[in-house]
Image (cartoon, rainbow, N blue to C red):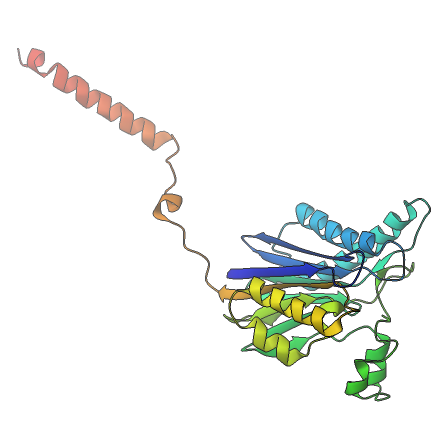
Length: 288
């Protein structure tokens, strides 16, 4: 597969950026990660950083392709959760940091994703959100239960209260993990924090992310999110992948041609050449 990567992370009207993102690529695919450290609790940036560090370490030990993608994502979330708890206990004084998590795996022409909290994953096709994660948040729960309307989710006083996260509490979160979805050329995968998606709507995201380079589109969307939320804008962070081609890039002829290793055939050819040279050298003497 061939793809384009874009990313952005802005401070907003905050003193510290507690969002973290990471992209790891290899010839077999890519993993995208985003974490939004919980505000109002100490160590949010520590929690989000521990998430990306855990994924990096896991992929160093077990490079792509993942044999069981869904189990791979579940295990990453589980390990990150326990790593965050341990990192918090190592602080002086000890703290209980937490973070949202969204992780996306691309391999074998498919995509899988997992999330905890209200950071989102989107799959856009032709500018439309084909898939979108359902937030683990109090307001989303109220909306799903029909207790509030969609319009009231945007300004609800508890809209930033998440019902699940990694870290913070000893019990392991129940990560939502997708099945594999076949990718098409032109598909765009987007991972973003609530500071990025909340001030915008899905139609804005889809229409702008389809235009031009991903880096430019994400920066323009982040600026719009900041301006809409000013003077209370959150950290605005996003990472995206656009599928350029489902074909593997072709190697050049130089890359395809490997130097011959010396072996039995090479040794035999050398011997024959030496014999022919000797015959030509002593041909006159042999005739006499």
